[in-house]
Image (cartoon, rainbow, N blue to C red; front, side, top):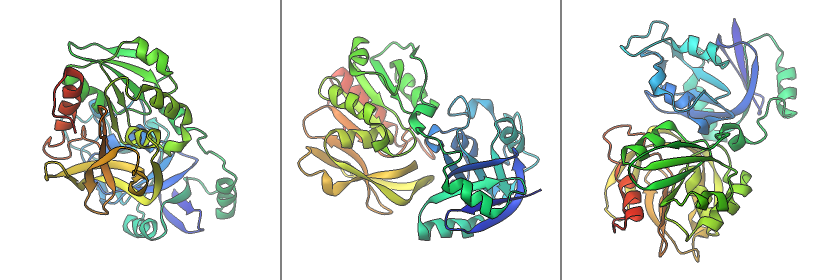
Length: 360
């Protein structure tokens, strides 16, 4: 069956309908990773988005349950040039197509993904509707513009509904879950942290009642300004305990100190983004997935110092407070797209909680 993607600017792209049946609305974005399609699909930060993979062949090593980054995929659609129908890997349990059907994700195969990517780069990310049936373009445009199928509050969609604990022998860390990836929890636990994971709406008083040695602010989807309740909680926590933020957590920290954020034209999504550590002078290759950035021009007077900078566009990729034990990065140090060269950031968080002196 022929499916279609209709963009809000009226452009229509067609392809073979794969995965689930039906129609779904979301923000159309692209990811430049050659691998990691399962981690991308199950990353809660993609909630509400239709993902275009720029690499032409996707699915060749299949789906392994141990590679999921959350309890289920949150993507609203998937667009690829070609799906591998006969995956080969010793851990593979199913094909990409069957995984998409199982989790009700619509996919288009055979789309000119490079042309779509160029369009997004030129015009910016935009809303789209992906459809696997014969619904007409005019009707699809009307549905999209009316907001049919929109996710009203992305963070509430992905956060844990209940507090839970991952016991460890080391420092007690409360994780504010805005859509936390499983590998972040694994890396914190690997360093010995005793983790208490709480919903995004948890109040500061409850967080402090767990007597944590540190507080971690996770990644998550959408605009940081859409979670004012979390922002107020973070403001109350600052100065009380060491804080480490990643991605959305990084942006929320900037807002909490009085800086501002803005939407990037087409975001950073891929596994090969170079970032310079301004303290060590070293350049690391990073995995990234975000559509917003901290506005460096608004950091003056906030006692925030830029510690990392993206070399593709000079955006703020890391910061620390001048006097408080608070630091954050925009990218994903837990993802390890190559060597585990960004693991040191978890070590810095441990230093902050245990009285070390190597932080940020």
